[in-house]
Structures are given as structure tokens and as C-alpha cells.
Image 1 (cartoon, helix red, strand yellow):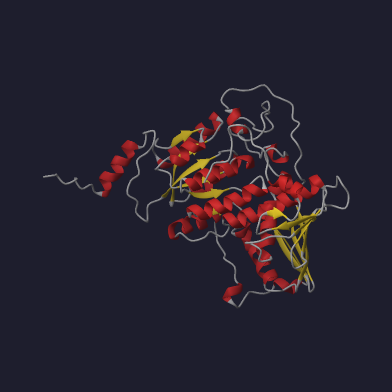
Image 2: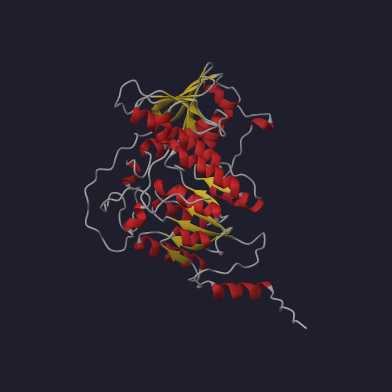
Amino acid sequence: MLSKTPHLDRRQLLTTGAALAAAPLARALPRLPEDPVRVGVIGIGIRGRRLLTGALLRNPGFRVTALCEVDATRLADAKRRVDEHHGDTACWTTTDHEELVRREDVDAVVIATPDHWHTHQILSACAAKKDVYCEKPLTLTLRESQLVIEAAAKHGVVFQTGSQQRSEFGHRFVKAAEAVRAGRIGRVLNVNVGVGDAPVWCDLAADEMEPGLDWDRWLGPAPAREFSEVLSPRGVHGHYPQWRRYREYAGGGLADMGAHHFDIVQWALGMDDSGPVRVIPPAERGAKRGAAVEYADGVRLTHGGPSGATFIGEKGMIAVDRGRISSVPGDILEWEPEDPAQRLPRNQNHAQDWLDRIRDRGTPICSAEVGARSVAICHLMNIAYWHHRTLEWDPAAWRFVGDDEANEWLDYERREGYALPRV
């Protein structure tokens, strides 16, 4: 006669789990609905560190179980912070995100790496069925945006893009989007968004390599080049590095803040599941402002103007940024929607919204599709600056219409050994 498996109560299970924490691949324990969501953080630069110490460690609904970072000093610093917070040394570390997403003690991942790594890490996490919070700009290319949407849907992950203007900043952006959607400025004619420049090719001089950084891993799918401390400043620092300026790694200032503000424009125009149909270059080749996209209803969205987003309609105007909101006439914003259908969510915390949706398996306020379509505006405008051509865009097919040459610009050739994961 076979003996019965001995029963373990919850205290015994937790004790067993602690003993297994140091194993190369932690063994999954039975989960209760109220248990903290176990999170692995990939990328611990300034933004990753702020998410770690703010959104994650301060929220008892999360438990940080794993960390991934290519700079040894940043990795050690992050582990120290996590261990001190949790009062143990169980947090596991690696330089390889693939190892992290395979762990059974990781339910969800936070991705805060440079943009050129996002899609690789998103696709790996989705294939491993880990819920995802990824910083904006969500992708580096239009093709990547399409793939991210497909992967999140296929694997049923709860996906939040870090475009926190939908949740935070005093709900100024929520109020602006509500007013535009409710017709408070009448039919929208034009929208201007004031953000930085399109990116340029990287021409930085080589610096002497320092120990403690896996530079090849930092580059990943980007072209091989010598180390530059401008691209990856060593250790724990308090500034945003300049890799954002360069085409190999990011979408420039246009995408860095544009991903935030174009996201609000898409929201206000009711275009979260679609996008523009035409791409218009600036009047002069080499100009840094003036590229535009146009929607099927004729609304034109132009890069240029005051910081933030300015909506111009037949009956008035609304201007909104992180620290301000105003309208002409002034009474446009002296209004609250009476119809609940006109009222947008008023989240208090973007990461908390992600946590709540992990619990109920709902859709966060800035899903994979929302984030991918918002950053697509950045990619389309960058293409307008780089190639200075008017192009027709099909937002459903994710392709330029009748233009094989332009469709070659949807993606780029990655370095050998760094093909996108299959999902």
C-alpha cells in the first residue's frame, strides 16, 4: 500500500520555500490570492532604481525576488536595498534576463533597460507567461510594436506600459483627455506636442573599458562598438544617460518624452487601438520640428510647440503638461462629466493599477497595445525626419501602403546572436 504524502501547513511551506531560495531555479510554492506578487527587475539604472525603491519595495503587494543588471556595482547596490528591506538575503541576481524570466519564484517582471533591449525582454517574459511592466518608450521599431501586442495577447499576460501620465500628475492629463473626448473644445482640428529632437547615429569616441560591466551584454542586438561612458555611466548615478540620443539604442528626445505626450493625444482622440493614416515630413529637410501625422478624420498631430500637448478645436483650446493645465475660454475646464461613460479612470498610482489588474486579471490603464501604438507615433515621426517623405500608413496592418522601400524601415538588422525570441 502506498503511503500518503504528509500534509504541510502554510508555515511549513514558507520555511521550505526559504530553504530553497538559494537554488539555481527556485521551486514554485502553492500561491494564495493575498500573497505578494513576486517580481524580478531587469535593468537597474536610475529609472529602474526608482521603480525598485518606490513602486515595488514600498508596496506590500510586491516581493522582489530577482534582479538583473549588467553593471556589477548597480546590481550589488540593488540587492543590498532589497535584502535590507526584506530582512534576508534571498533575492537572486544575474546579468542574463533569460535566466530571470525562467525562474519559478518570479510571477512578473519590471523592465527598465535601454529601449533597444525592451522587445527582446518583453517577448521572453511573455513566452514564460510572466506579467510585465515595461518602461516607455515601449519599443525601438514599428515591427517591434506589432510583435509586442501579439505576444501579450497570445500569452494572456497582464501588461502595463510605464506611461504614468494616465494615472499620476494630479490627473491633469485625465481631465484634459476627458474634456477633449466630451467635445468641450468642439471638433479637434490640430494637436501640437512639444518634445525633444529625433535621434542621430552614435559617433561617440571610445573610452577605456572599466571592470565590472558586461559591455557586450549592454549592447545586445545593437551594432558592436567600443565602450562609451556616455552610453553606460558606471555604477550608481543620479542622471539619465545619453544613450537616449542615439538611433542604435533609442528614439531620441522625440520618443523619450513623446511616448508620454503622444500617449495622451491618442487617449484624448479615442485612438488607443488605432493610429494615424498619413506621415508628413517637415517643410524643410534637416528641420528639427514640424514633422506630423494625420488621422483619418483630418486631425493633424504636429511635433513642435510648448512642452506638453496643446489641443486646438473649433470652440477652444486645451494645453496640458505635468505641472499645468489651461484652456481658452477658461470655463472649458470648469466642468465634470455627469455621464459615467465620459469619466476616465483616476488611478492614484500606476504600479498599483498593474498590481490590481494582476490580481483580477483585468487590463491595466496602459496596456501593451496602448503603449505600442503611442510609441508608433514617435517612430513614424522619426521616419519623417530621416527620410523626408510623405507616406500613407495602415495602422491595422502595421505597414506603409504601396511602398516597399518604406516598409524596409519597419525594423532593423540585429547583431548576430541577438535575433528576437520566437513566441
